View: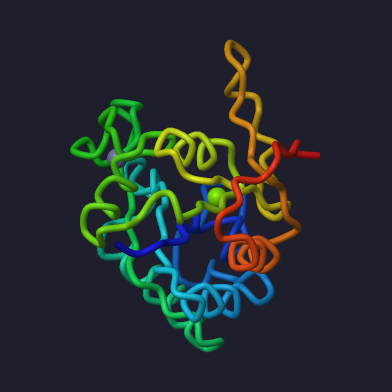
Length: 205
Ligand SMILES: [Mg+2]
Ligand SMILES: [Zn+2]
């Protein structure tokens, strides 16, 4: 079994553009040294796996073919700094039905959209991943919720949404990142330096 670092995409590896999100390859702008962070993770023996919600497909803003060009651009930019990604798992769904101009086949309530765990479960099965030695890095509390539901150490970054998206949790306690870091590079460095550490509860600020 191998350990993995699961990376959210927008707001962690590349800048979160806001609005409808990343709609084409030209919208991909890396967070500084994200490629170096991925490289460092792999050099330390971690699989580098991206898990990402892509509701733009269900909403009709991006086709599956378009999504492949976005991912190709992301991989290319990360690889320029030696950051080779082992796999990208994405959820193309969104639960809202009948969005005008959307793709009805993808307008479903699924188990893969984070905080659902199906993307993570698929990756764990495909790569025989040791959850106890793995971690997740995200900029949204949805990422943190998915990671915790899988029993993963789940770290927040202060880039992107910076885990401030508490508005979804008005009726229940929001997930709490195990730690917060300034960016993905700092988070990966911590994972490498503290492979067995669960970390103290950190508060998004
Ligand atoms: Mg994100
Ligand atoms: Zn899904």
